[in-house]
Length: 413
Image 1 (tube, rainbow, N blue to C red):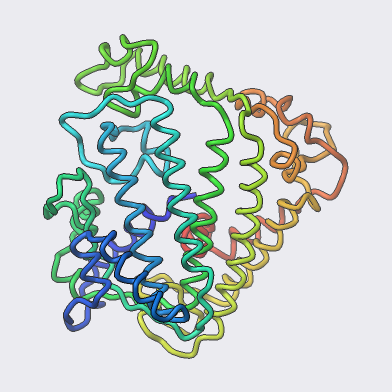
Image 2: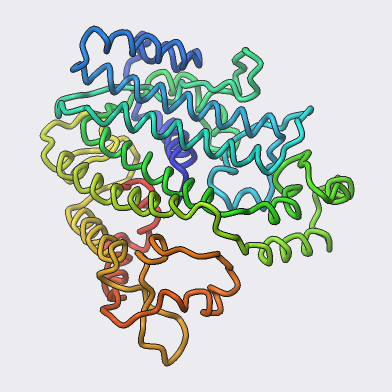
């Protein structure tokens, strides 16, 4: 899964490179003022006060959810900045660690418990956003936003530099040309279908966080945290002291990568989190169906984030067809059969007719060892006879999405 913030903001940077999409500039709305000035706490307080006057004001509730999400994103990036997140080939493999956090010249030491707190804080923030959006019932709600103007105070210095805006940050990271003028003129009209979509993404990210927090990864942290953070506090300070200043690829790096894979062997410490995670995953599929039901019922054509086949989306050249939507709904049905254990995942060892019950992986969990899972013995507990998911279903999905199913999945949710 591509993390919501990275995938969403990359799309924003792409949008800002297409000047034919821009419209006439308009003054910032009330919510945009908070986003532009990174005043997420002030925005939250203002919208909470309005909801106290009228609890059924779904437009304000939508705004509140957005500023809470952006506040959560800022807290996450500030935590990663505080501890000196490294930008390298290792961190690029992990969605949260790909966030565009600038280099901290004076990073604080970080412990394993600090990293768990970062993830738990994110989980708490996502839960708050979900709780805020849950009561929204108005199918006519609409929130035009020039999201590219949003700024995040990455380094928590109380000042907003030019490179702390969405459009500037991703222009620098991707090399895609963009301008502040384009950001000022481009709005996405988020609507009721997008409310459900956002709830689904919050559940997806929550599930991933719960899975990580269910296990004890302290040994992995002790031996490889120097690949991720500038000043990790571990039992092996020589790993930090001996780090190559040039960042070149040498024997130490090879040894670290081998160690990283070797230590993906996690004791299970909080099994209840995995039960919550699979519930989150099931909520994602249910919300996605609701979202597409609303999107397919739309008759307008107004700066659509997720368009139906009769609409034009804001993403250039990204056409959504009815076969794509039908294929996505088929995927959701198939995913549900796996999550509930009604169908099994094919086992990769030869001459074994049993499949893996994914539901039991979450509801009857055990320690996780990547190498043993790859070899097959790690999955032995979950093997059983039953109906296995049909590979033709997945091949048809790849065909419908022109081989780009996973790219569209990150967008469709």
